[in-house]
Amino acid sequence: QVQLVESGGGLVQAGGSLRLSCAFSGRTFTYYNMGWFRQAPGKEREFVAAIRWSDTSTYYADSMKGRFTISRDNAKNTVYLQMNSLKPEDTAVYYCAAREWDRNPYRSGSYDYWGQGTQVTVSS
Image (tube, rainbow, N blue to C red; front, side, top):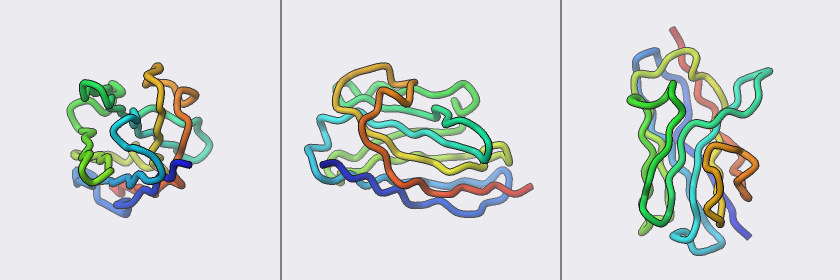
Protein backbone atom coordinates (compact mmCIF):
# COMPACT_ATOMS: atom_id res chain seq x y z
CA GLN A 1 0.00 0.00 0.00
CA VAL A 2 1.27 3.42 -1.02
CA GLN A 3 0.17 6.53 0.80
CA LEU A 4 0.74 10.06 -0.43
CA VAL A 5 0.18 13.14 1.69
CA GLU A 6 0.44 16.61 0.19
CA SER A 7 1.19 19.72 2.16
CA GLY A 8 2.25 23.30 1.60
CA GLY A 9 -0.83 24.70 -0.06
CA GLY A 10 -2.41 27.93 0.99
CA LEU A 11 -3.32 31.43 -0.03
CA VAL A 12 -0.80 33.51 -1.92
CA GLN A 13 -0.90 36.71 -3.92
CA ALA A 14 -0.31 36.73 -7.64
CA GLY A 15 3.39 36.73 -8.36
CA GLY A 16 4.18 34.91 -5.17
CA SER A 17 5.54 31.46 -4.54
CA LEU A 18 4.61 28.25 -2.81
CA ARG A 19 6.42 25.00 -2.31
CA LEU A 20 4.27 21.91 -2.19
CA SER A 21 5.51 18.70 -0.62
CA CYS A 22 4.31 15.15 -1.06
CA ALA A 23 5.31 12.57 1.51
CA PHE A 24 5.46 9.01 0.22
CA SER A 25 5.13 5.93 2.38
CA GLY A 26 4.35 2.25 2.15
CA ARG A 27 6.77 1.14 -0.57
CA THR A 28 10.24 1.83 -1.84
CA PHE A 29 10.05 5.41 -3.01
CA THR A 30 12.96 5.23 -5.42
CA TYR A 31 11.08 2.77 -7.63
CA TYR A 32 8.20 5.14 -8.25
CA ASN A 33 7.67 7.78 -10.85
CA MET A 34 5.96 10.81 -9.39
CA GLY A 35 3.66 13.46 -10.73
CA TRP A 36 1.65 16.51 -9.83
CA PHE A 37 -1.81 17.24 -11.15
CA ARG A 38 -4.32 19.92 -10.35
CA GLN A 39 -8.04 20.35 -10.57
CA ALA A 40 -9.95 23.59 -10.54
CA PRO A 41 -13.68 23.76 -9.74
CA GLY A 42 -15.72 22.47 -12.65
CA LYS A 43 -12.64 21.41 -14.56
CA GLU A 44 -11.00 18.09 -15.28
CA ARG A 45 -7.80 17.08 -13.62
CA GLU A 46 -4.86 18.66 -15.39
CA PHE A 47 -1.26 17.56 -15.66
CA VAL A 48 1.25 19.85 -14.00
CA ALA A 49 4.62 18.14 -13.77
CA ALA A 50 6.27 14.76 -13.42
CA ILE A 51 9.63 13.26 -12.58
CA ARG A 52 11.00 9.82 -13.34
CA TRP A 53 12.80 7.62 -10.88
CA SER A 54 15.34 6.21 -13.29
CA ASP A 55 17.07 9.25 -14.75
CA THR A 56 15.22 12.10 -13.00
CA SER A 57 13.85 13.35 -16.29
CA THR A 58 11.23 16.01 -15.73
CA TYR A 59 8.09 16.91 -17.62
CA TYR A 60 5.96 20.03 -17.47
CA ALA A 61 2.77 21.35 -18.88
CA ASP A 62 3.48 24.26 -21.20
CA SER A 63 1.74 26.76 -18.95
CA MET A 64 3.90 25.79 -16.00
CA LYS A 65 7.27 25.41 -17.66
CA GLY A 66 9.64 28.09 -16.46
CA ARG A 67 7.54 28.83 -13.38
CA PHE A 68 7.20 25.46 -11.70
CA THR A 69 9.92 23.03 -10.77
CA ILE A 70 9.43 19.44 -9.71
CA SER A 71 12.11 17.69 -7.70
CA ARG A 72 12.51 14.72 -5.42
CA ASP A 73 14.55 13.89 -2.38
CA ASN A 74 14.82 10.13 -2.23
CA ALA A 75 16.43 10.23 1.19
CA LYS A 76 13.31 11.92 2.53
CA ASN A 77 10.78 10.01 0.42
CA THR A 78 9.42 13.33 -0.74
CA VAL A 79 8.59 14.99 -4.01
CA TYR A 80 8.29 18.75 -4.27
CA LEU A 81 6.65 21.26 -6.52
CA GLN A 82 8.17 24.70 -6.35
CA MET A 83 5.70 27.19 -7.79
CA ASN A 84 6.87 30.68 -8.66
CA SER A 85 5.21 33.61 -10.38
CA LEU A 86 1.83 32.28 -9.42
CA LYS A 87 -1.23 33.44 -11.27
CA PRO A 88 -4.91 33.39 -10.30
CA GLU A 89 -5.36 30.73 -12.99
CA ASP A 90 -3.17 28.44 -10.89
CA THR A 91 -5.87 28.25 -8.23
CA ALA A 92 -6.78 24.60 -7.83
CA VAL A 93 -6.46 21.56 -5.67
CA TYR A 94 -3.05 20.07 -6.31
CA TYR A 95 -2.63 16.32 -6.17
CA CYS A 96 0.46 14.22 -5.85
CA ALA A 97 0.47 10.94 -7.75
CA ALA A 98 2.71 7.89 -7.99
CA ARG A 99 3.19 5.18 -10.59
CA GLU A 100 5.37 2.14 -10.38
CA TRP A 101 5.65 1.46 -14.07
CA ASP A 102 7.23 3.84 -16.52
CA ARG A 103 4.13 4.87 -18.41
CA ASN A 104 3.11 8.09 -20.10
CA PRO A 105 3.72 10.74 -17.42
CA TYR A 106 1.22 13.22 -18.85
CA ARG A 107 -1.87 11.09 -18.35
CA SER A 108 -3.63 10.79 -15.03
CA GLY A 109 -4.57 7.22 -15.91
CA SER A 110 -0.91 6.28 -15.80
CA TYR A 111 -0.78 6.78 -12.04
CA ASP A 112 -1.67 4.15 -9.50
CA TYR A 113 -1.84 6.17 -6.30
CA TRP A 114 -3.09 9.61 -5.38
CA GLY A 115 -2.89 11.90 -2.42
CA GLN A 116 -5.82 13.75 -0.91
CA GLY A 117 -4.85 17.06 -2.46
CA THR A 118 -3.85 20.43 -1.11
CA GLN A 119 -5.61 23.67 -1.94
CA VAL A 120 -3.70 26.44 -3.65
CA THR A 121 -5.45 29.77 -3.96
CA VAL A 122 -3.84 32.65 -5.80
CA SER A 123 -5.40 36.04 -5.27
CA SER A 124 -5.05 39.05 -7.51
